[in-house]
Length: 492
Image (tube, rainbow, N blue to C red; front, side, top):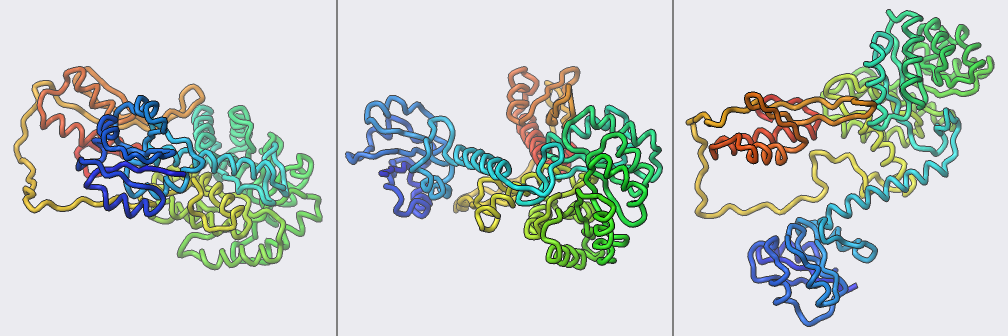
């Protein structure tokens, strides 16, 4: 395939490094590649015939007339020169766009393909268990279990909204955590409320045999957590309801007791079993617990494994994306089946979504027999996969200095806030930016649309105030994107 890549003088070197010998390069007589126009391109085109011409991804203009004239597709390449090598590697089987830069188009296409591939693998997988048509174990995808902490003491609306949020974020199983002070009536109500809210598998998490039996009689699908102290009291209900049981050791350090408890469960007739050797927090036996998981999997190759990721994430002051990526990688090598998180603390917000992504990544990597990279789906949030070119310091640059003066805007001041995402009419609605000026409140998803509305309504009259609003609104937008709180005039 013969491809021509169009650029300007400033980006020429970066383009040549990225393109190498994959395409020809046309350097137009302009400094900035984004200023490419159909007329300028037409005057500069070589006589050679090409199958595709890629103009800079930030170029504007309608190239449809030129396409017809030269009988050659003229499409948008990537926004940045560094991405040209990546884009060109897909050129043979990609239909590029006149509206969407190639880098964005390919990222979305690759993500769609990755999700489709994961769905196909899941559909064709074999599993040890099936709970409400959800496959568990075998070579099926690791399932994400989201715990609603202290579910028995939440109102019906609070519990329903929490469940709907977790499902929207990608949870496969909803776990109802019951505290020591939960009554049987509260446990029953929680299960009934949860079942009316969703059809996904439900589990209950408590060591109290009375609460376990209440939940089992109310139609729970999975019981956490069984050991020698409660198994005999709830075993009959589990067998009668064909419920799946998550079995733990009597003490986390007593590795032999989990084998004894599983053996006892099998002898009493409990057949749907998941093993949880208990993942410990870092600094409290984390490495030893990994050793227990490894030894369990060596001894038992088929019983599904429960991996309590939240035990580590909740007790570590680190961004959860990387923690979840590495823990999910470990879980994949152990052939674990359930990734558990309560998403309880503020720093752990987004854990369900991150684990869902991680579970798909690990499934694709395992199928491909490779490391979990270049899959079309990732957990990169702050780090870049490909760096952009840095600018150069001009010799005559003026040292910038902030002004200490402040002048009130006659049009008035703004109070800027962000709202939290919430469930409305059974659906999750993302948070918004709110800008308040006297009796007028403007709500929007991005800084641009809020600021454009402020300008359109004539609510700002000073340039310095407009610049200030742009800075603060962008901070608010980033806070929403990164699931952070926002306070006006504070550093982000």
